[in-house]
Image (cartoon, rainbow, N blue to C red):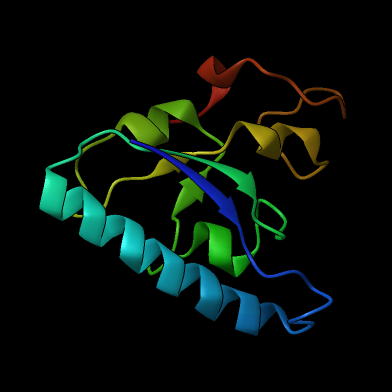
Length: 110
């Protein structure tokens, strides 16, 4: 399933916690559709209006996105991860080498 989103902007919801609540509600809808139609693979694209590491992106109760492809592929958790490749654009990417973002996700710990 491919889902396009345009979540609420900081202009409408300046508090990041408000945007977290909106992301959690929207993800609840996505989860419901996945259950109804027995979808096991979902891609969510669009304007999230959040940084990749904001609570609405990484929380267990919302999108649970990770920068690490191997982590996203794990199936041990009750809730799967979403892989967020845009994370490496930001300076706090844990896979960065010598201060430069890298697209080599094989460096992620498992």
